[in-house]
Amino acid sequence: MLKISFLMLLLASFLYSADVAIVKKLNGDVFAKRKSEMAKLSLGDQLQVGDILITEQKSSIGLIFHDGTRRKQNPVFYGSKAGVSTAPVFSIDFNRRRSYNMKALEKLSFESVTIRSVSIPMRRPIVAKVGTFPEWPFILIDVKTKEGIVGRCYLEPYLKNAVRYIGPVIEDMAAAFKGRQLSPLDMYRDVIGSLHLLGRQGVSVIAAAGLDMAIWDALAKAAGLPLAEMLGGTVGKMRTYNTNGLWLLPTDQLAKEAKELVAEGNFSAIKIRLGRNKLADDLKAIEVVRDAIGDDIQLMCDFNQGQTLQEAIWRMHALDDQGLYWFEEPVVFDNFAQSAQLARELKTPISIGENIYGPRSFLDAVRAEAADLYMPDLMRIGGVTGWMRAAAIAGAAGHPLSSHLYPEVSAHLLRASESADWLEYRDWGNPIIAEPFEVVDGHAIVPNRPGNGIDWNEAAIKKYAY
Image (cartoon, rainbow, N blue to C red):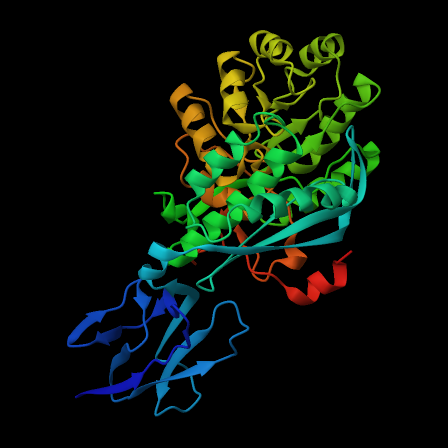
């Protein structure tokens, strides 16, 4: 005879919010009773405050208890015989996400911004044409609303001292928003419109991008949706390549590092930096890496704008039969005519975009046929708003779109972009992120929780603050 047990699932309540359990794994039949309705749980279902969980098992009573603490990323609820901690007769493994009252979305208003800076030692220091970086700085931005919701994001300014001039610009822009309803499109329009005299490139756009990203995060949290869903896409997996190494190192160090990069997430693609003093050394680097990882792993390459046109013509043609996925930024980023010449002449696709400021300049590049592939950088393209406008241009023109840095936010945006190609993965910011997303079999798993998924690891921020 079937026996049925009931237990109220109590989830913590918040001002304008409540935790929501997202069912990630089921092992056995579990039912949720909500008011007078009962339904069998499926993957992806939400458990809400007041739900009652029910299990039906022959000769056993399923009781629910919590195994673990709130600090765990994926708390697990088990059902077992009479509440005794034996082998479970069913389990629910879920991701917790916060769902906000939709009324809060209607009246969410800008209150203030907080800016902090950290610098994190690099596990593999950057050695590239653009410089050597043993540590990596981040500018952390928290946009606070009157209703208590906080939108979060960060900027990657390359230089530690950049916070001295980027920070005040962000604060100046934020002062004009105080008390206004959060509306990223209106705010983006107003900020960009105010830059006619200062120019739409450089620090001003970087500051606007930081505010824009945080505002979108707050809105998505208010709606109880992951950012990808807020933008009309879905959460899920996104193919990604590992960019965490293979800098301009001695060639005898590359084989070991290449194998490590592939193994870090069972990646199907990694990136190498080229542009050594001698062409023979670039060819040797490619040979060493290819021998280490085999022919089934895609290999991208980046020149970091290190070639003159003459050098690029000579070197790119010599490397054109190496089976590389793309040549990234062989020449200075804003010389679209030179880049277009290389794109016409070479078989290997040309990729640019990380240094393009704003969707209008992005459109100029597409019109100039400056590249085959594009990879916007959130800090320069104009945050979420700028990205989505650039993504529409790339999609309409049929150009594959990848990302540059900012993997946590970029993964959501690629899930909402028509011509999404690759997510660039780097773990340099993981120490300050409370729950970095997973990479499984070469795919980033875009988290199913409201906003962009960024919450701070305050202990790490204290450790790396400057």
